[in-house]
Image 1 (tube, rainbow, N blue to C red):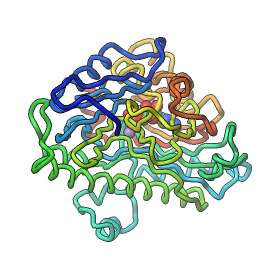
Image 2: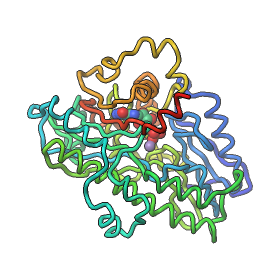
Image 3: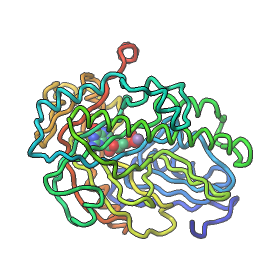
Image 4: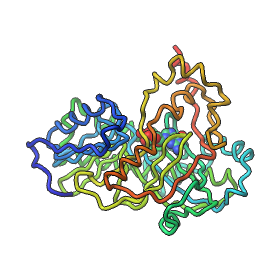
Length: 381
Ligand SMILES: Nc1nc2c(ncn2[C@@H]2O[C@H](COP(=O)(O)O)[C@@H](O)[C@H]2O)c(=O)[nH]1
Ligand SMILES: [Mn+2]
C-alpha cells in the first residue's frame, strides 16, 4: 500500500480535486478529523467528497491494527453493479418498460431463504432480498451516449446501440444490524485483534448479502424487460478491507483495483464508465463513487425548488427518459440539482491521472423506491 507514516505520527491527507471543485468546508473538516483517529496512516478525499454522518462520503482511510465500523456506516456493502443487456435500444418499448419495471416496488417472489441459505448468508433479512431500498438507491436502464475506447468498453458489454443496467443498492437491514451489534462509542474504533475481527466477519456477510441483493434486483429487472443479460461489474463503495495488519476503509469510494468503474451522476445526468490508471499510493486504490451530494435533503425541500417542480417534470429526464417513483418528496430530495456535476468530478479524476474515460451512458429509465407509508407520515409531522 506504499510508504505511509507510522501509527502515532500525523496521518497523510490527500484531496484529489481541483481548487474550483465544489467541496464544503464541513467535508474537509471531517477528512481532517478522520485523519486524527488513532492508528490512522493516510486518508484520501475524492472530488465527490461531501459531509457524512461519522466520516465524509467520498473518502478512503488506511489504519494499522484498527477498524472503524462507524466510518463504514450502516449500509455496509452498498455499491454499483453493472449489467449488459441482450436488448438493443431500438427494440426497447419504453412505455411497456415503465409499466413493467414498477414490479420492483414490491417484494421479490422468489425463494429468498433458499438462496441465502445456498450462499451461507443469514436469513433475518430475507424479506428485503431483491429490493432496492430507499434514498438514493436505484435501478437504472441506460443507453450508450458515446464510446471513446470500443475495445475496452466491449469488456463491459458496452457497444453502440446497446442497453445496460446499473443497480445501486446495499445490504438493506443487515448492514445496520451489524453496525448496531458492534457499536463503539466515540471515534476509537476496534482493535483488529479480537473485537475488530469479529466485526469484519459480520461485515463480510453484509458485503456478500449486498452483492447478492444487487444480483436479484438485476434479475427481476431483466425479467420485467423480457431480456437476458450478464453481470459485468460489481463495485462496492462502503467497505473495509484487511491486508495483514492494515485496514483500508472506503466510505463512498469506489475501489480502483477491480477493473472498470461506473461513476453515475444523478437520475438526470450521464454515467461515466472509466478505466482506473496506475495511481499513486496516496489515492488508496480508490476513486469517486458518484457525483456526490451538493445540497442536503432538507434544502432540496425548500420553497423555491419545490414550487418550481411538478410531478411531470420530476419524473422525466433531460434525455427523454422516465423516472419511476411515486414519492414526490423523495423525487425532490433526489432531484438532479441535489448532486454535483459528474462531468467535473470525472474531469478532476482525469486531471489527477487516476482514470481514463471509456464510455458515457445516459439514463433511459430510473426506478426509485417510494418511502414506506409509515416513514412518510413521520417525515411530514
Ligand atoms: N444514474 C444515477 N445516479 C444517481 C442516482 N441517484 C444518485 N446517483 C448518484 O449515485 C451516487 C450514490 O451515492 P451514495 O453515497 O448514496 O452511494 C450519488 O453520489 C449520485 O451521484 C440516480 O437515480 N441515477
Ligand atoms: Mn451507495
